[in-house]
Image 1 (cartoon, rainbow, N blue to C red):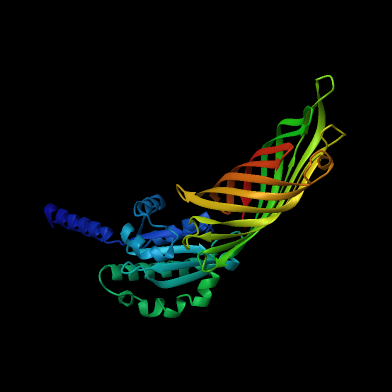
Image 2: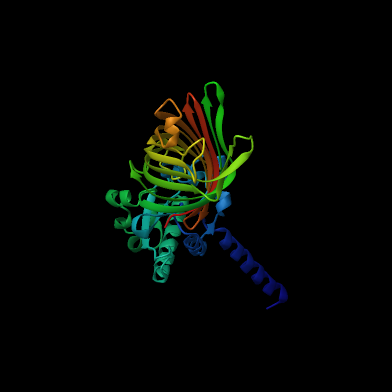
Length: 404
């Protein structure tokens, strides 16, 4: 064989290989909130063996440009066309650590296959599920490519045996593992700073004041939520938070005009039940709702003072708005509420009212760190509205929460 003949064969082989590489179908994977990052990496790696997988940032940019919610199942068809892929794979974790993969074809965005795997403790993908997952991915890619070329899911190789219709979720099963169809719990711990000012007006005499410079605070929180109501549109929440001060010292004017220091302690306990309504079924959709419950707040002094210890106890109601933005791993929350409190303790003897309407405001940012962890930055203001007294509490917290 001449040198030119060998070169021609090599060139033909390279061209054929390049054309074959270009024929690999494009696919996209959308992993919902509760899918562990390690599992996402395994899914992307397995899918990459059979298709060119779009990077996550490109998927999000394309979805944002088309104004499509990634988590909105009803927009899957539009999303596939915006991404220009032959296959869209959705991954979510439902009840009992069950990972559900749904595969959507490009013609109408309809789901043609579902595959379920029970994750090991810690959220890891079991090793014995790898081979079966690889086969499912291969068959799904082939089916998606067949539809993209104008065919049908049944035209893909192995469709008669590997894509059985009974693998698709039934309505009953779908409700169990819907996009947000699981009961989850969380625990949180926070550190922060607080600032409190109390002033009581007295006729014919100067006001009584009690102030404190910035003081450190710590808090703990526990809660649960269930978001399988109305196919993920409604979210039921239970939350309880306790906050207390650390090393708090307040100052009170003495008779000679000097300030004397008093060891003090601040407490704030809130327990609420809440309901949220999502504007779409997306886990990251804008939601609004209300919380109702009970709140107890107290400010204790270690020894008697002109302005005595204070305590507030009564029902609380809050209006809440949650809005994701940016990468949708960030959620902003604004809450406004009223606490109808009974005034107890020594302050009840100094003010004319036995109850105090208290206005509360809260603004926070929550950053999803993955693997169930989230970091939150929050600012709160609390104002007690009394005709002859003013009591203001301000605080900022940095919290770390974990959802198993």
